[in-house]
Length: 462
Image (cartoon, rainbow, N blue to C red):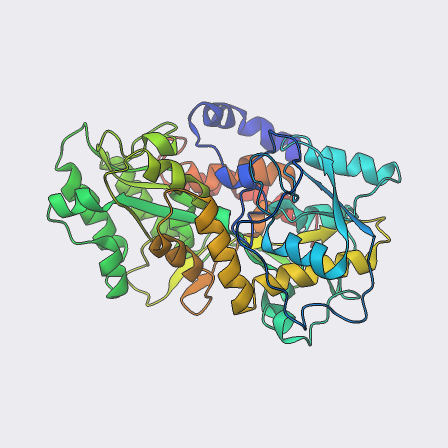
């Protein structure tokens, strides 16, 4: 059935390969709860010679029941958790793991494009790593394939730091067991909305971040501001980058839901439909700057008001215009709602099938959760980040960190990305970005053409 539907959409998806924006969250898989870079490793591991910001170890940081001194945790990934020539500073969690437990991390290198095949090969060959990055497709696709093992035996959900994220962990229960231990959210994977504050001031526009602080930042204001900026001038644009899916999430609803047992096709959601209609208005009004726009080019020509990309892009965007101030603001809320919804990628590592290194994995999970929970370690992580990343004002860092607060920004999570590689790489992009890529004339058309595909993917699990 899937092959039949694939043939139906072959022409549409071929066009998508020419016009669709790169799914930038896939280029920084897993993000980093401690705000470290996670781009694909291009340099060799370096000999660590000391940290610019030292990690002070609290007396209660080590669990007395875990003794892993001299042991090794095997990590498979396309970036190294250890210091490298590109990133010589130890992360807070690595420093805790090494200095308090006396253990080390062995890097099993893969690439972004081959990581899942390499993991499967290692498991089948009896060479399983201990941990692997959590990715959209981890749940339920790779769990259902038997790639990972449940974590309830190594995570103490009664511990306050784990109890604090138990609700998120419950989102990923499979056949009554937990597989994802949320360390926090992926700092590099937030889709941030940037603008040049100098340009906004010069044009006499209201400052978007101030409007957000006043509770006035909604879809209507957002669209009106872009139309004011362009003023009918076809050489000016309202927005560029990767943004359409982030905008739909602000509706508070997503395309595929999960209740802990069954998945549900939610393409008929009235909330999603309203958001898609706004996107259609943005597109038909000529406000979208098409094509790939890298962060370094986002504001240099001053022809586009907003730029959206992953958090990782801020440094390049701000560094390209050093005399200006690049501000960020959350995506606007639905004017009929008081809640700001946001997709926030869970940052976690998966316990790989075949790993028998339970104590090392437990210790690693605990230090990762600790640095995202304890204020002392969050402050150390902040100092490390600002010391080692140019062009990042403290105010901007603090705004991104505020996105972690679920009371301020409610998580909107779409399970559709995890149903299969096909859904992840093709169908979901088509649904979220099809309008701005001129693949459909309306949301209603997109929904009807893809409805049966989503149903067939869900049937595999229900």
